[in-house]
Image (cartoon, rainbow over all chains, first blue to last red; front, side, top):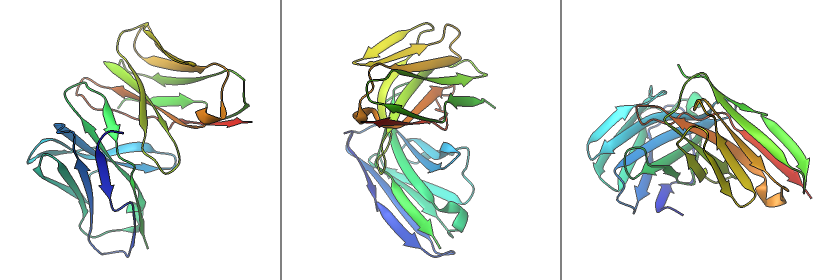
Length: 112
Length: 110
């Protein structure tokens, strides 16, 4: 397995609370991505990063923010969680341009 | 907006049967990746195809990229129960971004 660790693996929280998910890699890959996976929608890109402090929005970025202060860590924050953000969140890493992406095992987030 | 369709959405077969799943788009891709995902895990890369008409084999799995680089297929010969999973195609656009299809959920019964 690629050296990708997502934490926590499972979380249940209440509407309106802040939530931060962490993706940690040991591969020193430049690119990192956050996706959400929902039935009927496949994997959709939330935010991505080209390098330290270099991030951009994906297809479904509303309600999410990210930070990358170190190469190895990419954080996804839900400032005020809503029930529509209940999903499985996946982090992916990519070594260089046009290289394949490798995924972590996901975080299952439930917002009640 | 690139439209991406995977078919069939669901497939249930007996062990030993052959099957083909498809990935079609309205756009031309620079490359395409196939992944398999099992419950509770992240997608695992199977193959990347880059050249139009390219065929790649991975044991009993044969991947083909369409000549026009708008479509791809995955053929499994003599399916085994271990092939059960969600198969995802992910073409890459010129901007280095992947788009994921909804996947084909394959169940291989013993």
